Amino acid sequence: MSLKEITWQLTTFDQLTTKELYQILQLRIEVFVVEQTCYYQDLDGKDHHDQTQHLMGYLNNELVAYARLLAPGVSYDGLASIGRVIVAPRGRGMKLGGQLMEQAIAGCEKYWPDHNIKLSAQQHLQVFYQRQQFKTVSEMYLEDDIPHVAMVREII
Image (cartoon, rainbow, N blue to C red; front, side, top):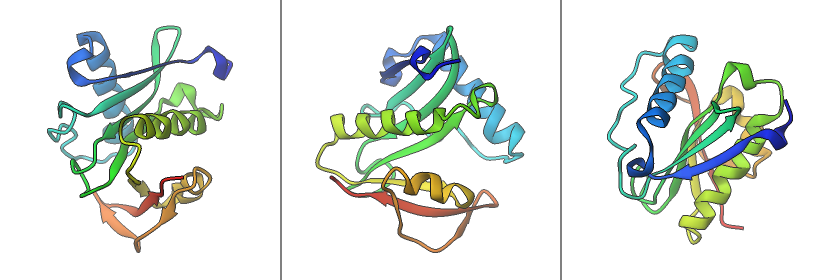
């Protein structure tokens, strides 16, 4: 697979087809609930917020990458945010995560250009996010029993 073969789509909840919504939820459950054995309430009411953007990366009509972009104030006062960042198991090892984050950052900059971006990163991925110009702004904390750190990318 070549990263050039990935088709990116950024859309609101109301624009999602039922098939796309199913693929998103299936991937989020596959990775966060089953693979990471993290039992949490994934459907938190933020998916269908008016300004939420769903970023999907497809390879041959198969969802292989996903991130949820949230408007300032939805999760953090005055800050846009990126969450539910996933590369499907079948898409790993191909540097797809970097391209996913580039697309997510570009989406935030398009919709909320005057706002910094915050995310809650699993601690072991801190260096990955630092390569995307995110800076750690908290000590380690547990989120669903997984070590996390808060990270912010300032407007460039």
